[in-house]
Length: 387
Image (cartoon, rainbow, N blue to C red; front, side, top):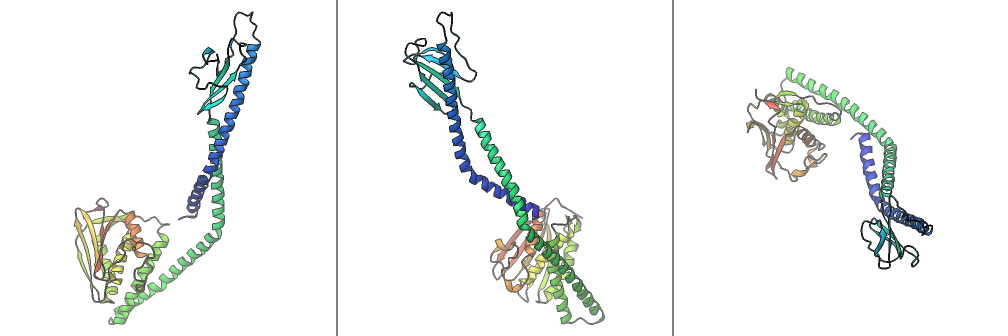
C-alpha cells in the first residue's frame, strides 16, 4: 500500500473513532442548547404577553373598537376562568389550564393570569408558538464537521511525520533488495550458461545435473521475489498465449529439478486454444504449482499434469502423491509454510492467489494427508480463443 493511501486510510479510521467518541458530549451539548433555546423562547413569549397587556391597558373604552395585537410567529388569545375563549387567534384547543410555561415537544405555551374583570372580562392570556431547533442542529453539525476535518488533517500530518523515518528505512530496504536481486541474477545466469556449455562439450554427469536443478530452484525463487517487488509498479500487458506450448516448456524446464528426487512428471496435455493473459503471470502460476508439487512429493513418486477442455473452458490440473495439506485454507497466506524443513519463503501460492483473483480463474483443491494434493485451475470462457 502506498504511503498516501496508508495515511489517508488510517486518518479516516481515527477521525471516525474520534467522531464516535465525541457523539456523547455533543448529544448532551445539543440537549443543553435546546434547553437554552426553550428558555429564550419563554422570555420571548413573556415579552409578547407584556406587549399585549400594555396594548389592553392603553385601550380607551370610548373608542369604537380595540385592535388586538397580532404577530407573525405567535398566536394568542383571551380566555375566561373556565378557559373558554373570549377572543383567540389559536387554531387548536389549549392543553393546559393553569398559569405557567409549558413545552410539548416543539409546541410552547405561556398562560398568564390576568386581574379579574379588568381586560374584557378575561381571566387568562394564552400565547403559543412552535419552536424550531434547526439553528441548534446546524450548530452541532458544524461543530462536529469542524472537529472531524481538524482531526483528519492533524491525523494525516502526524501519521506522515511519524512514518517518515520508517519510509526512509523501507526505501533503503527496497533499494537493498532490488540491488541484491540484480546481483543474484547475474551469477545465477552465469552458472546456468556455463553448465549448459559444459554439458555440450562433455558427457553429462549427475553432479552437473544436480547443480543445474539447484540453479533452476534458485531461479524460480528469484522470479517469485522479482514479481513480488515489481508487480504493483508494472502494468502487466496481456496477449494471446498458446497455453499448450507454454505448459510443455515449463514441464521440460522443471524435469531436471524433479529428477533430483527421482520424480516422474506425467503430462496429459491436449489442445486448449489460446488464453488472453500476461506471460509472466501465467509462468508464475505454472512454475509455482510444479515447484510445490516437486517439493512436497515423496522421492521416487510421480506428478500428474493435465490440460484439457471441459464445458468450453480450459482446465489445468496439478496432482502430486506426496504429504498432502493439513490446512488448505491457509496455504495461500503469504509466508505460510506447513513444513518449514522444505525451505522456501511461503510466497509462491500467495502470488498465485493474487493472479487468479485478478484474472477470475477458478480454483479447486483436493488434498489428503500422506496421499497427495490436486490443484485444478479453470480459466474463464471469454478470455481465450480456440486455435
